[in-house]
Image (cartoon, rainbow, N blue to C red):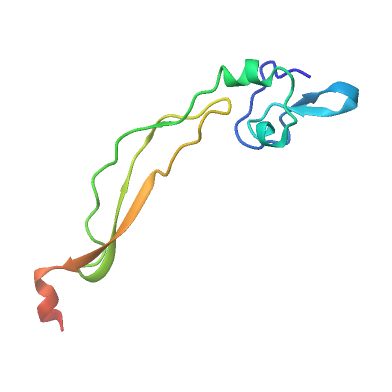
Length: 109
């Protein structure tokens, strides 16, 4: 079986080619774990693999709560998406706790 022009990221059961003795061989990056890659998978797909590239983190948002426990968030963008079984993208969003301490908090009681 051959992966010519057919390399898929992750696990994709539709990404296969006819193999020896009427068995299927696969051209998805998951085939490396399952051991059922087509003979030319590494030469065809790994050479073309492009891992995800992300930009820098943006600034943290303000606290979601003016008074008391809340959360802040920040994000980053994908600058180059993964292709041909390259490394997937890392988390694009982060969240962390914060404590709102607006000047009016003490008088709101």
